[in-house]
Amino acid sequence: MTKRNIENLRIIYLDQFTLSNMVGEASEKWSEIKRLLFENYKSGKILCPFSLEFYAENTGLKKEKAKLIESEFSTLTGGYCFKPEIAIYCQEIVSKIRGNRITKKTYLAEKENSIFEPYENRFEELKNLNNEFSENVIKASEESNQMAVEFQHVKLEKQIKDELFESLIKENIEDFVNRLNNLIKRNSLIPEDTETSLGQMESWIDSILYLLITKHRMRLKEFIKLRNFIKSQGFSRFPALDIRFRIFSLISVNKKKTMPNDAIDIKRISTGFSISDIFITDKQRKSEIVELKFSEKYKTKVYSGTKLDLDLIIEELGKIKNYTQ
Image (cartoon, rainbow, N blue to C red):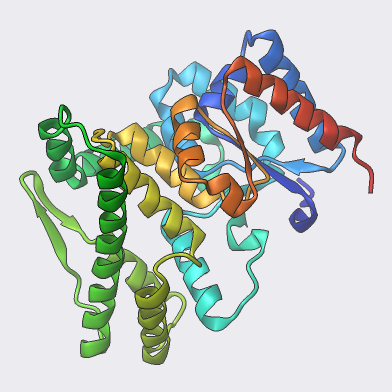
């Protein structure tokens, strides 16, 4: 497959909800969206990369449908996929600390046949990985989900909800800064585990720091710079982390449980939203994105599967089709 200059292409993110609606006997509107996507891809105007979450989540479908979705839409990826979540967090951090330019290749990588193809041969392996991920989400969300159950009937005024939301963001910032302080003080990373009733969980912050040390060779002075930056500005200049923390905090404030499918959706949004020109997802995820004003912040148009939004997607794809430089 001939690789394209992705910096000149518009990125359109298609999540599991979107792909499932376009496969097989799709409705008239979804069929039109599918037609326009392929026309715009063939004319060299768009790219629709898959993510690792797509390959894992797709195994939750019947094998025949999963294979059909992958085979029908893999062409639109142009041979590219989103990098793993942790890798993108690290890329954003390194780029900011070292003054490197953020480009589409910060988030995208060329697909490797050994990882993704043939998809059918790796279906069961990916399914097992997805099951393992689901178990880890249940572990990690145990405390917050219990609180959601206990407080689900407690009505909070908007001011209280706003204050709680900001306190959760502040807590996430402090957790990250504290792990950086420990690393800086010892000049080495000593991993910490989170204790749950279902066992110990490796700190995901440590996973980021480990990759920054081993792959990106960040030095002590760079970790000090990162610590000071996060301490003063939070995650405002790291889109993936900013999106991740804000959606999880919103879910907590709204007293909703975090289920495995929620965690996958948040992975998708945190890694793919800021780089995308158009992001198509389900109604609930769009509502959260709108409430958090991510579209304005990252200049990304977000749509769901409502009748109005489907018409708007068709209109937007039509504009791309007719656009000439």
